[in-house]
Image 1 (cartoon, rainbow, N blue to C red):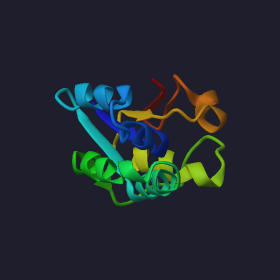
Image 2: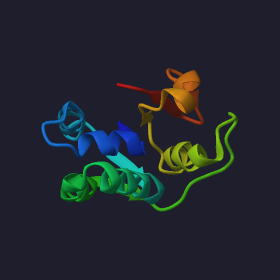
Image 3: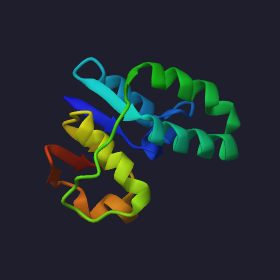
Length: 122
């Protein structure tokens, strides 16, 4: 199992005593966490603006992830431009799942598989 982490998942997991962190820790022995620089930078910006004390925790979390260096724009679904690098990164990184909490943009895809990636939420 290869789980691609959206920025909002990284944001949540970087917070101390986060249930999201516990979830990711339970995934790691069974599979691999994957993300990309686009998701990391979005999470970094949001953490710096809202909870700067969690930046160090984010950096530690990222060390446990494979960081995909590319993404595809060849997707068969309509997404806002800002979300194409997320799903496109999951596809390019051969993820089995895209884990996101973004109901507004990805909610219509929850439970669907796009180019081999199942879009899921917690």
